[in-house]
Length: 66
Image (cartoon, one colour):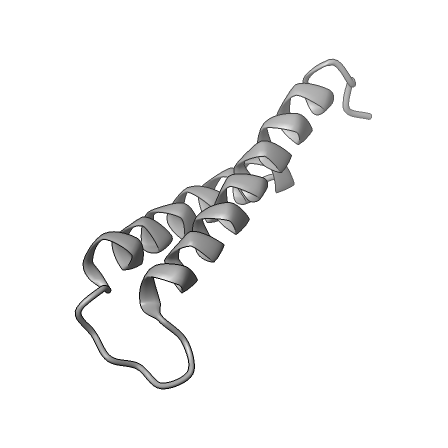
């Protein structure tokens, strides 16, 4: 698995976990942090990973492998 696909897969999984926390973590009491806020942070990180993976895939598509 190349780096672009790895970043895309990790980003999608991270985004989905963050979305689940944002949607369904509101009723859970956890000290120090709130789960919906952690979900938003994970969604941002997942989105950044997806964008990075897309950029790497687009950039690597035109470069021949030696």
